[in-house]
Length: 441
Image (cartoon, rainbow, N blue to C red):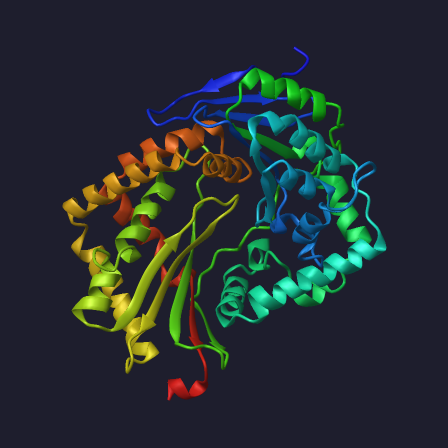
């Protein structure tokens, strides 16, 4: 059949599964339709399997730079016209760049979907840039780095920490880019990235809301179907980390730090297609170790039992194409030095591994996670984003829809086993973030 590289699939693998229909156009573009007929609204999202970790060495920041440039002119559209049309039609739009993807979206009335597709398809293939565009937007992203990173000691500390964690993988390079490389980004850098990666066979179209799959398919064929596939699209293989066999430590000093704190990250596995069980266990571990201060192991031990800290948290995000991180943060209470706070954190982790998990807490968390999955279905934009992040990170629709059931199947033994594998000091980076070396004396 002329539109299908694979048969039409209606996926419903879980009791919580959304009504999701998938297509693939002849040019390789994937189309995902999520039906939600409760309101006459549609979210139109175009995701590219290209983020900052796909950038060529020496051109850090080009993925985000190009995101800005895509709001400029095309062969037939004036610079900024797309945004003005969205606003004139009562909608909203934006774009975003991460390590593994770049995305563009519009939220509009359902009957405006053809208009959104026409504009989005146009800028996939017909971008026209001028040297003034390059100079202007390069200045914009440099100022964005000033505001979000250079003026934030916490952001600078995280940047250094990731660079220490990922010695060989591009996850160690900031999404926004290193300043000295951002300053040299030019027309050739932007167009080379655009010509290679902004192609239908590297894109996922997600349409969520008050739509019918057949209608979306017809529109996708009309607007995106004529765009030729990129024959030279490279296989998505990144340089990987060598085994980390020694703990890494750093001290980040910045006079603007208001409160010294400890941050630690460990290399942690991502959600893999058909094998999400360990990631699910780590999702529980983050909540059990550093979720609510009233119920988490670090919160109880450090904030209440010993008043060692004013904050203790843990974070894990498994939606990456490659291994990511499991992170801990502890902010010591007044009068507690960083070494004592770190020792208390390690003691609390050791006690958690030794004493096991309270079955009642495990069940409460299981219920909480299930409720979160159910409530998430009420946000059509959030659903579209959930599928886009997963599919650009190597997962499938089936993986997304099986995730709630996989979460429900996790038991305490799974969590403790994952904790024992991941919480290895030899695979960690520990950072002390301080205003001055005087706090260490």
